[in-house]
Image (cartoon, rainbow, N blue to C red):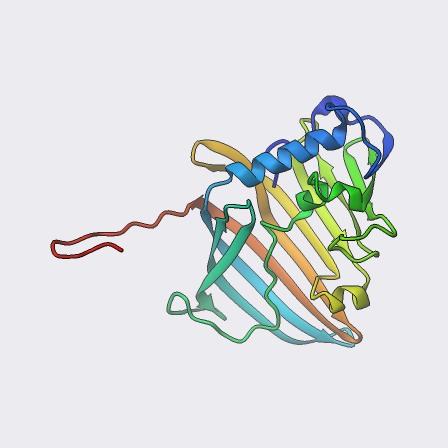
Length: 242
């Protein structure tokens, strides 16, 4: 989700604690700056979404739903990203745009709450980070108050030789995740997406699991044809605007 997550020169092996970075040129400072720039500059956009949503019980698939949708991502004044979707087909049949149909699960937040969120300046105190080659792992720091993630949260990101985000994973204990309505596993692959003359690193594939005892729900989505989201209005003679 970040256009440039890391600078290549900063990919040396080291171990960093979330509350122990110093200097304006540290690795985590760079990541935090990139994350803030992403949240500030990303325009509203829409993508085509292709989804397989399934539910299992005792490892046996009970139901599977295939659908396509138009996903819209809009940014709030605080930089938060809100996601809404409207289905365009359901089980292979066209649907009225905006219709809602039964789904085993629908996972949202892949664009606004993906792995770059774990590296923002305000969240770095909540995690320990290990940097090795072109991979960074993160783990919740015990005993830190005011953090939104459960203590079991851990994961990783991978980048290419130029520091561009390629892959991210987030893992959580099933009981802790269930209590907070979070996924137990989220895997995202990222790619370059041009929007408004700039290139952003956005999710192009998402896989998520939600486990609750013997029950498991999975969600697989592919995003394509992302473009600016624009709204137009026509004022006719005699109309008034509020």
